[in-house]
Amino acid sequence: MAKIDDPRGLNGSQKAAILMLALGEEQSGRIFALMHEDEIKEISAAMAQLGSVRADLVERLCNDFSESLGGVGNIVGSFESTERILQRALPRDRVQQIMEEIRGPAGRTMWDKLGNVSEAVLANYLKNEYPQTVAVVLSKVKPDHAARVLALLPESFAMEVVMRMLRMESVQKEVLEGVERTLRAEFMSNLARSTRRDSHEMMAEIFNNLDRQSETRFLAALEDRNRESAERIKALMFTFEDLQRLSGVAIQVLMRTVEKDKLPIALKGASEKVRDLFLSNMSERAGRMLREEIENLGPVKLRDVDEAQASIVLVAKELAAQGQIEISESKGEELVY
Picture 1 (tube, rainbow, N blue to C red):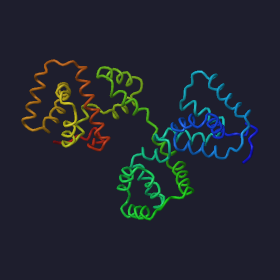
Picture 2 (cartoon, one colour):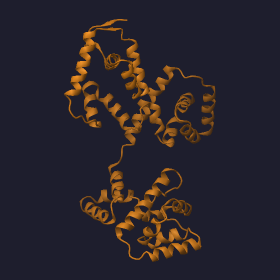
Picture 3 (cartoon, rainbow, N blue to C red):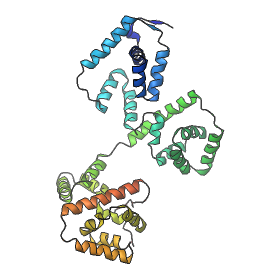
């Protein structure tokens, strides 16, 4: 192994490896325990290939590290600061690709990230790939996620993938790295671009969490300034009145899930249509008891009604996200009960 004399020729992994060796087995072991597997592999590989490092060089690196920490003060890590640093060292298109991947689904490795991608989106991409590639991908993600993706693939194609998975032994490192590169370049970067949040969607969620008076005030003010944006936001908002877009079965699931004391308060301030929607999906006895509860409430603060309705809307959204209920896409598509 070569002897290291010049610190300028060292990369980040080599410098980290030297620092870890200088700390000793006990301290470096604790630091390794906090690292991700990929980081451990990278630094370990650098350690194994370091060779002899002069004592004065080790001391210099430790001093540099100490001074850089001591002189930095408070630091703030953000997408913007990260992008600025990368732009100093890499071509613009490479920086853009890296940042799009970072902003994509959360996860440390490519396989972690794929685990956070909707099975429908992943299946739609994989159905155009070679069965062997799909077999490799599904063998690396979690079994429950792989099962959902497999179920969405065309049947004959899915069976070909299953056969490849059954015949597949350990995947060669070069093959795995090739699949990762393809996914990173063709899928994850495109996904990051396509899933950036629309500003109107973001504002619709914020408006959904406003109390009724504030929501009305903001929407009215926005209509004066930009009617088109106001209409788009209103179309994206999901309110208590939009529960009319649920089927009778979905309403029953929702009623079994919400807190029992919230429903009478929420319905106290609801329209007749929404109130009838809930009552018509209950037994006669349960409906009669709910009507009595609503009547016995007496005057209710608008704030309490808003809070109760917001909590029920939140439950409906969570149930829809979990696939337990479906929400009709069109607000104008009223259902008959």
